[in-house]
Length: 185
Length: 155
View 1 (cartoon, each protein chain N blue to C red):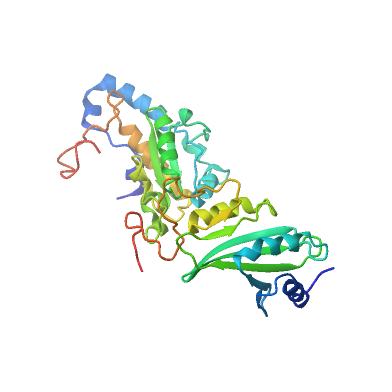
View 2 (tube, helix red, strand yellow):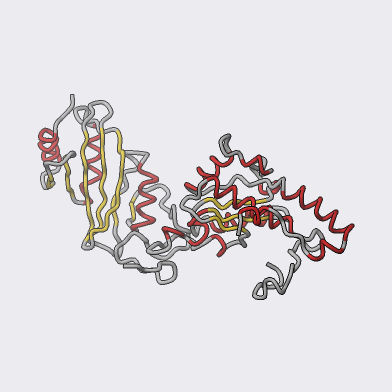
């Protein structure tokens, strides 16, 4: 697969037929996917990398991830940048619950994906943030470079562009093309 | 005036006769029994010739047969340093006297050692769990700590 395949949202069958609704949908999703505001939340070294992504050299405001919000009520995406321990888990859950729908979660780095280097011989680490809240995009790395986070954000934007504004779900695209995939993915 | 390790050893021997020493390290290491500890640290701080006014580290250690607490002291006036160790063999109900009344900065350190090693510091104003949840069972940094639920053992 080429890089360009990931960057263009594929047209669903529905988008080819239902012209008025899908044109509105496309417009709304274009707007939503280009203004994904992240929550100021970082628990360890991935947070430094996330700050670097936000800073001048990489500057993810170019992709519409415009401004860190200090309140979950104003945020669209929570980037879990770091280790989640047992004591942090209820806090993370509460932050996620306080975010307004539609909300998205990016698990950044090995710790947020699976516990990473703290998988074995530890009493305090949660083995993956998806044990606590649902995750949309996983970004591997320890920590991932800013380019990786940018790529993860672009994947999330691609996902947002596919969503139906009516149900908030991604409509099934072409069952013959992906026979093993579930109805909503 | 800055005292070297020899002078400090002589002075501590005068204060606590049954103290034992380890030498030829960076710091002079004094080992005393838990009941002498509070008294020793108090006089080390209050004497003008030592004036150890800065407790820069407290460490808890589990060396299987006993639970040890290590105090690192420094004098900001004279510039000399000393290490005081004390240990208890009681693993079920280990107790030490708190030094919070001498060094206020010891409060959080003692809390942490209580949390992770289960050593009870008598006289501590607010001894509680710090890092672990309030309802946690056991003390995770002990060598004999087992947690079948949370720990995936790779040893």
